[in-house]
Length: 97
Figure 1: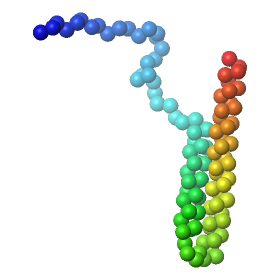
Figure 2: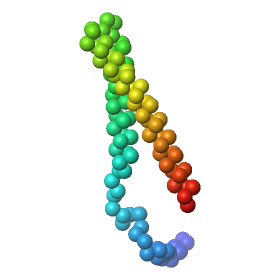
Figure 3: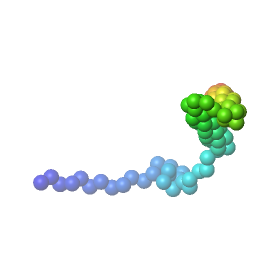
Figure 4: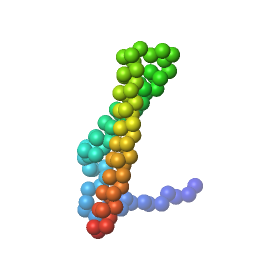
């Protein structure tokens, strides 16, 4: 039977707080906006798809379909706009350093 090596825990290299001691951080405003845009985009896309499967939609359903389809298109554009603005912002931050 082999003897177990005597392993002592090492001290942290810095006095900064370690990960497990840090309080949870709330999401940034960007994350709230992005999640909201994703939610409404997927919701309008789903409703648009659902109404498009109807054989003969009523005039009210046709209006809802048009609204949801427009919302879907704007949401997809907003998603790409938000992502590209985040990339540009991150690149500007790296250039400043």
